[in-house]
Image (cartoon, rainbow, N blue to C red):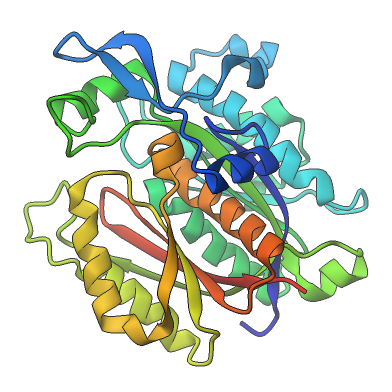
Length: 353
């Protein structure tokens, strides 16, 4: 990238924290918050999920309450509200309306979620001055926020914007979603250890260039060094053989664009507890082992709050930026997120100055 792209703001809303600081502290201490709820699975056992505490979620705006929205969409709007506002605290008051690049679910239930409509409603819920004409929804699940980050880097490097908001939001603690996942035997329970705990949350990051950050005296949390993307043809819903090639290709795409990088000392992975996801990481690491510090740190925060769906990548970005800011390490942090329908996205961060 011709210009350094940096993260200057972060906002998180998760089952283990109602802000970036709270979520980062909880995940550092490996605090888990997975709870049983009243809704029952096909075995008449309560679902175990990662649910955001009710007292931390703002109400839906009255004008949105009147619309025929699904429970999932209403919940997502409310979850996104405080996370977006936290990330936008660092946006200068003189800034123009900002474009939002937001990751959304890839799999739908009764009523598909329409990206442009959701973004317009998100602006109404938060009161944020969004440039809706240049805002985009990336409906690709877990990997979507990292895909949005790559688009944000292109816009900033090409001077198409001074600031861009990147995020992701999802609610899998929804009766329709839980029912489908349960029928597919993907929810972890006493009879199915090879499953995951569905969760909910939101994450947003405020991005700009290092020059703009310096101009406005903004504190840099992390630098975005490179991004990589690929597709896994043998994804979890595909009939094609699963070879784990997609993530390895995304790694190779990233490293081919950044031949001279610090050694990687930490990896944030979108593991959610299903055994399926281990193979691709093994293939990717076997082909790129020399890039990583021996005994590098592994972080898979789903163990704390469950699988956050399309919020997962954005929340990992917020956690990784907070970790780099706190540790001031001379190594890089690699994040990757894998979606159910084959998208594989990878991002490399280093500490800000």
